[in-house]
Structures are given as C-alpha cells and as structure tokens.
Length: 103
Image (cartoon, rainbow, N blue to C red; front, side, top):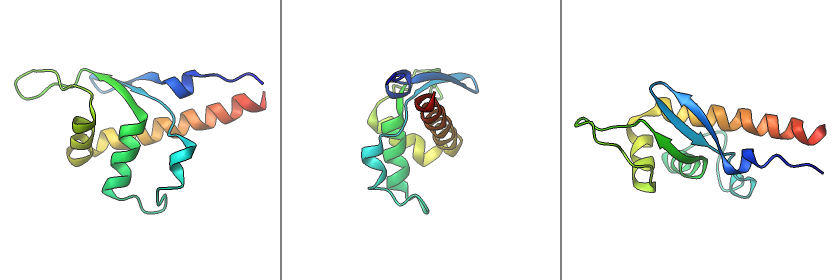
C-alpha cells in the first residue's frame, strides 16, 4: 500500500499575506473532541496539532510572531479566520488522503 506522507508531515498553504504549514489532525486525537460543538480548548488542540509552522505573521511593531504553542493558542483567541482556514484545509487534506488510499 502506497502512503503519501505529505499529509502527515504537512503542506504549505497561502493564507492572506502569510503562509501556513498544515498537517492532518491525528485520528488518535479525534475521539477526545466533541466534533458537534467545538470548545475553545478543542480549537486550541486542533490548531496546535495541525499547524506545523507559519511565515508572515507579524505584530504591531513588524516583529515576527513565532509559531509555538503559546502563539497558536493566542491565534485561537484573536483570529478565527486562521482557525477556520486550518480546519478547512486539514479536512481537504483528509479527503485527499482517503482518496489516495483507494487508488
């Protein structure tokens, strides 16, 4: 069976003026979430697991915002566009991965 590991390791996507490296949410963590009504903590877990890296996010002084757990949690607090983007892209990646297994 051929497995395309780019879905596990992450893939770069353009997000507005930035770039975000996203990987699929691990199946091993899905059971711990309430997928029907995601809480703040659930969203933090998803962003933390799926965002591997980012480029192009800067603060009000133009200083780069590093991609780390603290800043990912901050993004959940202040920037739902990013959260929605990550969830959408990881869902697309999951669908593509599932299709690749059938071929």
